[in-house]
Image 1 (cartoon, rainbow over the protein chains, first blue to last red):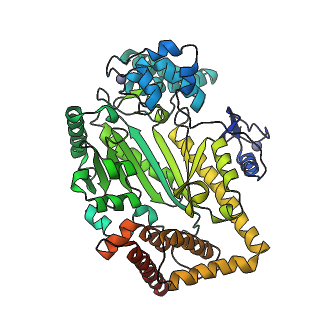
Image 2: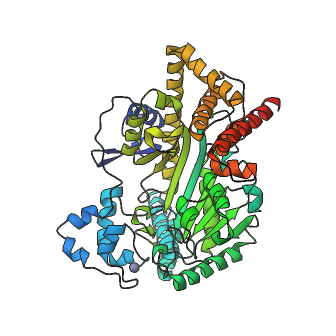
Image 3: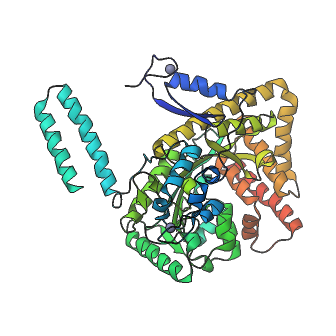
Length: 168
Length: 356
Ligand SMILES: [Zn+2]
Ligand SMILES: [Zn+2]
């Protein structure tokens, strides 16, 4: 169980993200502290400077040393050049994400602070992703079972993991 | 079916249940962006690929029809400009779709207007659910259901790292925008709006006016929405947004009390005056109506004037828009006629609300 980052006493039940000068800070807080900190965020004279989150996602990438190499990349499927993506802020097809993976990843990290999806997985087209997630869950349960010296249960989880890994 | 919805002065998100007493949170919305594999994204479609894409989407909808009996599939070419204006005012379509829908764009819509899907607009699918009050979780559940239905048939573009692959990389990950519409007159009156907007931005949220923008938002209706779409789950994003909305509600309530205590006479006068004007004016322009309706909403919330159901105030707000006015009048109106009928229709609503 995670404890509150602020009071270090109560279990953390809330997740809070703050942007200060473009820096992203994440907190795990208990309800009381979250209410307290949230309240203080609305104080009239809170002084912060603003990060520009709305700017083009690719501005930062195009300015870097990699710029020239990125500019000349083209998606093999839809033939959209990366230079166009930088201008319009839109990619041409889903394969563009593979073609421009480095550029997209680094701009997502800058703008959104993260580039790893943790949300919903589609039932059909996300099968491998879902299986990998399930394997992760079984692995955690396996460790737990070993810790509790429930070896029969552990063996069960081991079999389940093997079965899923075979299917992948 | 859509015809029936277009003939009413309301839409699902405006129909706040009577027992809901908090008039500050008006409505909640969740929008999911979904795109297909191996099909160019909408802005790259042409006559040929566009038609093929529409076919795929229509087939998906048809195979879901049993699960979705209250839905209707609409080609924007079958809609008049007036009807598109109505859908826009009910917040079911975007200005882009209303003004300039391409041949391969479509609208899938539920009869009460709570769910709609824009096809081939910015993304192949933009699934939207809007409900009254603080209801992001329910919006998400309903949008997900429709999403799951369509995904049984459609091959979504999905990547384990980047999540749902969208036309705009700023939507990638969950592909979700959640938003909450709030009525914040006291924050505006006390001059704290720009600070609140800044605070929202620091929290990774966007804030803008529903009618007009920033400090010029008519009717004091503001929308907050998430900017972050990747690295957090849909539920986390929604619950964070609801937490922040809760804090805004508390701040708004506190400021309302402060304003009333500091200057009780002018504060109450402002509200009773708005009530009087709305009930007696012969002409009301849109900006004035929205501003008076905001004062009325505030007065009802604070118990300064007699109770008027929130849904009726929402209906009057919708009716202040030109499309709804002309629909109710049954004809095109000049600017002067609009101002006159706006006043008249609002008075009709108020007199009915009084007797019921
Ligand atoms: Zn704490
Ligand atoms: Zn491409």
